[in-house]
Image 1 (cartoon, rainbow, N blue to C red):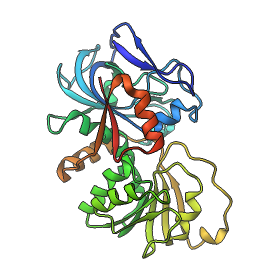
Image 2 (cartoon, helix red, strand yellow):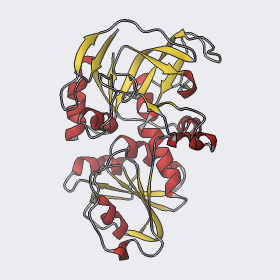
Image 3 (cartoon, rainbow, N blue to C red):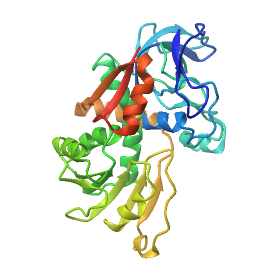
Length: 327
């Protein structure tokens, strides 16, 4: 197998040839056909997530086909197309797992961070944490659904049932969830880096009621705001334009420091919430919604060996939508 490997945070990934791997009990080996490049991968590679299992193969928006079954695996067949997300293993016995909150498991493993992920030609996965994808849609187009889509879905549920939603950072997650919001008959307002007219136009093309800089005031108050950009300074900015009783949802796994702000921005029963990982039920719900709605992802393809370029382009905001690696 071949893989792009992170050996030291802050350093480029290296192209390596590695021995084929064999699935253990309850595991499958998947031949990777596409793997999305997520902002969480940037946090891992840049060292902002501080406990990677080095050396590690990044990547957790994985689409591929089953090519080997470990002992005890049932319900999947060789050649079946599956998706593999960020949450790669949970203990099933801690208090959070017992309460149905496996996304908060005390001893989780994460694909592309604490276990090897999909920037490779093959990957080993816990069968419990994979999703059968069927044969509809292209591999590259499906890949971003497995994190950007899933975390976007969880963040949207946490935002509540309000009519007007603000999306801060209009990248992979926002361009997917914008389509869900529109399908639900609700309105969204897109906030980008000040001056990023390209992303603002992209948001308008997907139905944004308004698009502008994160330092601007939208034409009406928001019922909720979802922050996909990992910038802590956005929290007080979002609170300023969110109505009383509204919610500000932080959807990322990492965020820069939140500046101090006046309590009157929070007062009025406004809430700040964070999203942590996902549950398998989130995946089942969202993938069914995506198929029903007919979500179209906008992807830029890169060969696997150009993973470093894809990461650099994501960091610099050089494309709309999502980047996907093709082995």
